[in-house]
Image 1 (cartoon, rainbow, N blue to C red):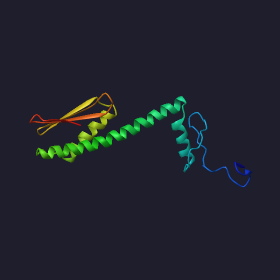
Image 2: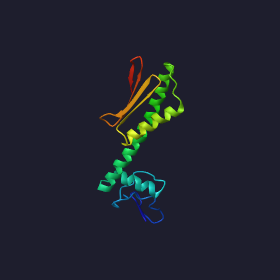
Image 3: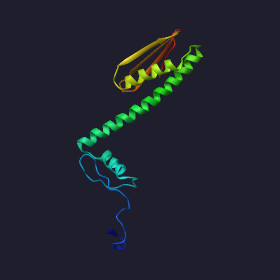
Length: 150
């Protein structure tokens, strides 16, 4: 039975206006539905992301870390594309195998497996590390002394 503020209780009207009841998957606290959810899983995710219990906070940090990692990998791929253009301008060939080495080196740095990496090829030196804000910094240096930091 649902309550309608204009007409009072209506036994025929279902309570499923929002469909699912958002509940934190860690502490079981029920949250106010703020929209339509496609499944109970979606509703529980919405509640867990806004809950302030310790387990939910740890989960929120993990979700944020994964999101930031994916953003950093996308930026890494963009910067490696820039490096390919930089190499072409200097008549230095950067093949797919070299691109993959650099990509995996960057991902290993982002994941904390290694602190930094450096790769030398042809007349290029590429070094990568994390800055104070945990963003990946890639430096390419050409033999003419030009250094580009992205």
